[in-house]
Length: 398
Image (tube, rainbow, N blue to C red; front, side):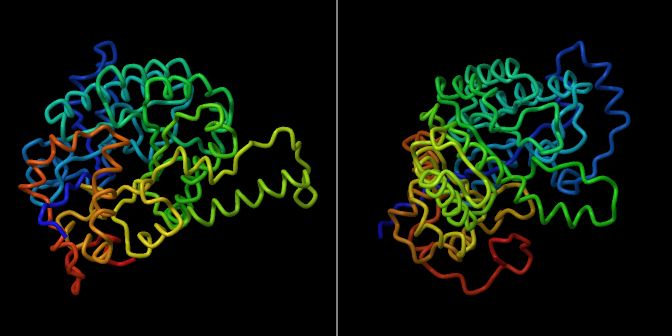
């Protein structure tokens, strides 16, 4: 082992502005609507309240806490509630035709704020802009804006709930112009857990049912893009699946490959018939290997174990800061629990090199920060013998 500290880049962090700040980034013609909306809004999320909420936007606190935890750079997903949203950005359902105009104004206010937030520490932050799929031309315009304003994290692709009939599913060729622009501009497409769920109605069981089904509805994004030929038509696309675990990937790819082989060979599976001429020329697993990456948030030893079946250069570590289920302030302990036996060269890929390649971080620029804050290989090689008592992160329980 070398004594050179690891460069830790988190592929999964979250940030957002306060309502007061978002107001200053909103198109002025929507200010009266915003004031009326804000007057009625009540925040239901505990991690967006009290002293902890300013981790989302407080530059000094955020840089200090990430550094103390060993992390020198971050990919930033949304976290707070943009103007006119019914809930935090990651969990909000797609806008209806009636509220699309205001929701789009809210997303664009967030993107403007995020561009400025990332510009404060450009070498340390890759921000992910938000888009909607209601109008493909609007989405394309936002992708171009995101690229022009150096949000290197790319775009957050919203999953489409099955009961949202006014938005085409992701396997629709309607989105080909959007994919074409993302490929042309080398804009990363990100899928994060939390979106894509149907309207469950008002029932006592809803929270439990939702919890059990979030993974299913999130995973549909990968399946729909793999089997619809998106990566065949646009081979330069990059898709990152973040905070979705990793253990489900090998089984899904095995299933899809099995379907593909049987349909190609026989034109049918059971009573279902398929046009062999329409089958994709490659296996779904081949498209995954060429076009997809995993943002493995707070990975457990079990999730690290799937590296035997998922290429090392597709796997990226993330802390999920500032969420309570994230590894802060025990990131080094979580790394010892999950990665203590892995070779140093492999960990440098997972902790930084893969992330830098996808999101265009400059590792040379981050090297002085890593030398100051990063954990050493010797530190991470010591197996964790005691879980932090006050942590609620799944990194210590799975």
